[in-house]
Length: 131
Image (cartoon, rainbow, N blue to C red; front, side, top):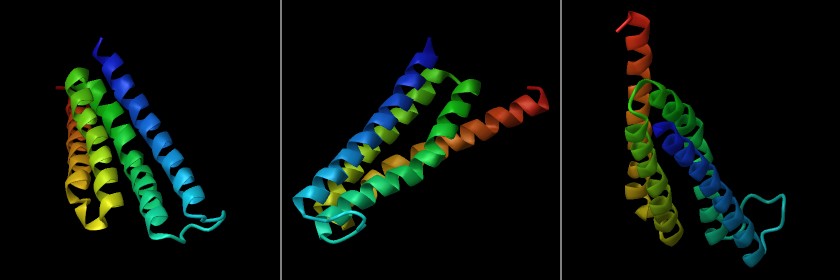
């Protein structure tokens, strides 16, 4: 039953990333940043950086959540994953408003990844040692 929550969090992370991509596209049009340019207006650059940073973190988040949830209570792991999702939203709001305001959102994103990674490693380690 708990795996449904893990799947939901995983899908919401993908949806959140998709929305961030939409916001980049909207900013590209609004600030007239023609493709293939990757910069050109400060606000566009901020939206683009949020999306790219989210991609960088998802590479760690997805396997850490998935593996941790196979060894520990999936509901708890999904809850930790939900904090990551909230962190990404806080990061978006802070970074777009003023890049210096991204710290809280980044912390709410990277700390859950660290917890999930440690949980995944501990689960694998316990399994290998026969616990």
